[in-house]
Image (cartoon, rainbow, N blue to C red; front, side):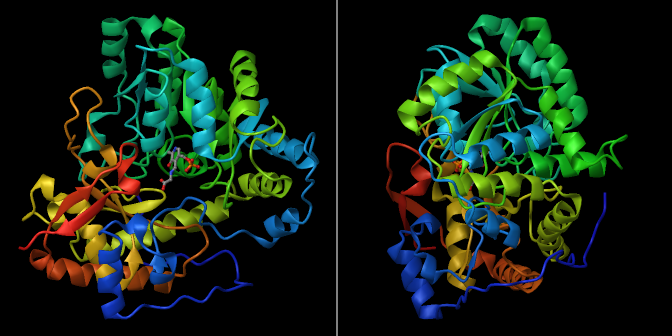
Length: 462
Ligand code: F0G
């Protein structure tokens, strides 16, 4: 694996800028308290560098902006839909496309169509909205990722891989008819942005063929996954990213896609499939929940930006810069012994909050605490990805404490310079040096669904 300490050179120049300021120390202290120590509740204007998410936060290219002016805002049959359909066929190889307003719209259609009460969906870890959309129609998501994914220090090059032995156990215990589908996330977000290998996808297809199980990808970060396959998997060193993507997708029956990530846009999503029956089911439902099947909640101009962004986001030169900018942040932190998830992932650097704040109990929400402390120190906004995100057990109502208690420093695409990355690293390193002075939190408000978005906390005296 390549170890770099040089920042990658940006393969673009900057045409438009948006001013940002660092709020005063006093304002930062006040702002995080007003937000109940939840970084989702901070005002954007109080944030200097926003690493909350890579979702919908990309900078679009001049080519995408030009496309926005070519929006065909017809209610039905917009030409931009057909451009999007063509781009998806060219880059991912799927024939059937249903547009949605964003990823969770596609999850809703897909899982409502496939999941019956009492069924399970094995998946390589979970994602918050995906898990909920499996539960709403009465299903349950079960974790079949390899064990290495739960260990932040394990250097397995494909920590997103499915464990086929775990999957076999579920097939034996439940029977194939109780498995709604097998779901595979590309570049697994909650595991630290860790890829799935082509070999694993190929073997999974073979396994699922034996039991007639459908495979549905969460293809949200599939271009970044394809980059890692090219970097790490024998035989793909010189393969164009688009060919890798097409091979990956050939092993799936369909996918959901939040275009707000790898497609370099601010809004959009889609469901795509090789399977006529899934297509018909989703197309019937899209008109109820999203909009007509040729816009699905997006404006014509949004679909054009997605179509162009999908092609741009699959270019090797762009991906090489992108992945290496994330890696640059991770390497700076690693160099200073700050505990992070290794190998450094595709879209973000994940801090290991249990090692960063070992003096806190799990019930004091170490990752939530750390995200608040980082903001207070530097006005850099990050996100908790640990027990608050995981939520409660559906049956017992108890808090679930996952092995990974992380803070995600998510890098928006083409937005921040390498100097912003260095500022962020500098702040976190200085915080790490005084880590034992950081007090924990108690939760004082908890909403019913996806609690991490709106829950509130107060500081506990050290
Ligand atoms: N699947 C994955 C793997 C995601 O990361 C997300 C969103 C979704 C589905 C849902 O898509 O937001 O367009 O409705 N992830 C964002 C994040 C919110 O910050 O990781 P959406």
